[in-house]
Image (cartoon, rainbow, N blue to C red; front, side, top):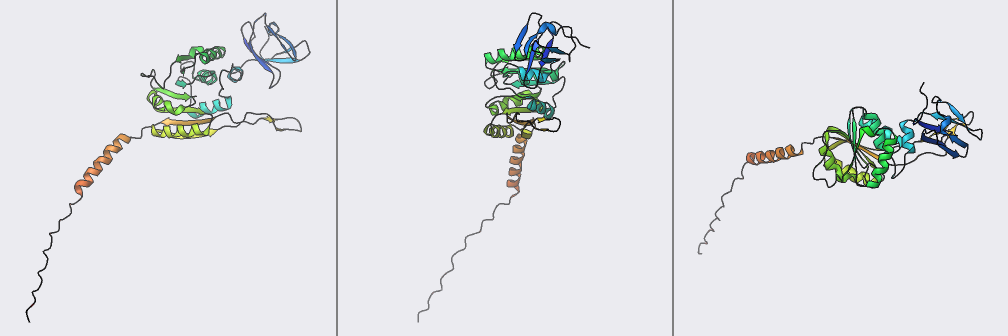
Length: 298
């Protein structure tokens, strides 16, 4: 069994609302409402063990999952929650070895989650224009242990004269105006490549959908995901009074080829052919007015 040692990541778990994520350091400790938790007390124990605090409370020593890292990252911006992350990965078919384009790094929650899936052969290329957010995201990505599989770019793809990537498997967009970058995203995606955009409002969703149609994307789907937890207890199981309601709308689509150019040529050709086949109208000769009969003199 894996033993906890210096620099091991540990989730100190008391209950759903009280849990602390830390990297073990012999000299570190922290004060909580359930007592003092010393890092040194965790060293040498197996994951799943528990510690007793000076207030006779206990915490479990759990090995952190990517869910834990996402929920505990430093928030510079609104994060994409696991309830949405799971659907994004499943719907887009994200897997090991894929090349992922991300526009709008934010706090790095989506970046870290996806990098953990595409590793070790895949890679996430993420773009942002805010240097402060990028520094926060860099720390969060490093804490999640996936820095090796992420490349950050400080570049505005809306105005970029030369696009830095091509043949991407999936594009993930988290911007206030995602429809603006759809033409650029299309050029960087492979044929049938997937796109997922995060839209906080329905107005954004509507503009985005129109842009997707204009730029030849198909299989367009918009969804919202609500998560409600259940408190299961002996004799009094019920829905939880707390939960994550609306966080965002998700828009999915795939790059296709509508052949609009060839259809225009074909339509023009058909029009010309039809014009040639149409018989010219026969000109009718003008009739000469009939001569009036002369009146005989009486």
